[in-house]
Amino acid sequence: MGRAISAETTKLLTLRLCLNTMIGTVLLTVLLSWVLTNLTEAAQKAGRPEEAAGLEGGSAFLTILHYGQIGVVLLAAWSMHQEADSGSLRSTLISLPQRSTVLAAKALVIVASTFITAVLSVFGSAGVRCLVIDCGAEGSQIASTPQATAGVLWGVILYWILIALFTFALSVILRSGLAAMGAVLAMALIISTYLLNITPFAKFSPDQAGSQLYQQPPQIPGDLGPVVGGLVLAAWVVAALISAHILFRRQPVRR
Image 1 (cartoon, rainbow, N blue to C red):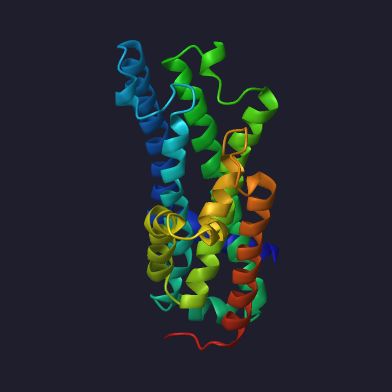
Image 2 (cartoon, helix red, strand yellow):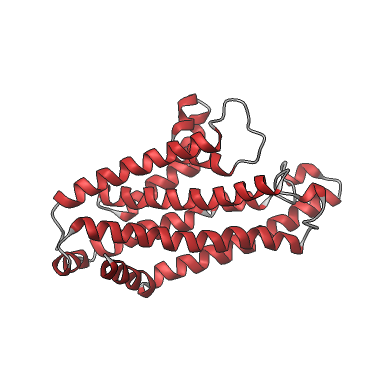
């Protein structure tokens, strides 16, 4: 397992797109968080709160972090796509025939790379807003207490890790990283939001349930809440990983 993890880490770090995705995700989320905080604060000071679209300077960056999941979804999808479509997965399985070990090593590397990307993006975005606003002021807090603030920030990190794992598992199931990436992004950014207006069951979709992990307290009536929402997303991830494991052990490898 140690050698498999080392090999998968080497692959990820030597693939320009994967490394650029990690770096780009961090830089873009931090930069856009600074820009949005600037715009929000300028609108509030100018007495035109309608231009801020209901955002507050202290928490506006959370909107950017919601869209920052695009980066880790791309990272997770590409990690499988680059091997499966190029035929190099066959070489991997020749050198290490234990498919379960290969799949586990890939999943662990995805978790580690997403964690690093998420920590730098989340805390970088939370910190850069302090260049624009007084983070010590009462109205500039992310949440009412330091514990609640930590819960929101770590909730974003946990969500990014889980949605990346879900994307990775889906790419194995569909045998296409691009299809998995398209499906997850369409669900997270378009479909589930639309379905939420039609049926309350849409709140149990992976992205809607997972987003409860970083919602600011107090909880809105009818929401799942961070604990239940996190468990629902975790259940989706576990189910997807089990399905991916079963299929990966049985499906033929492309030449």
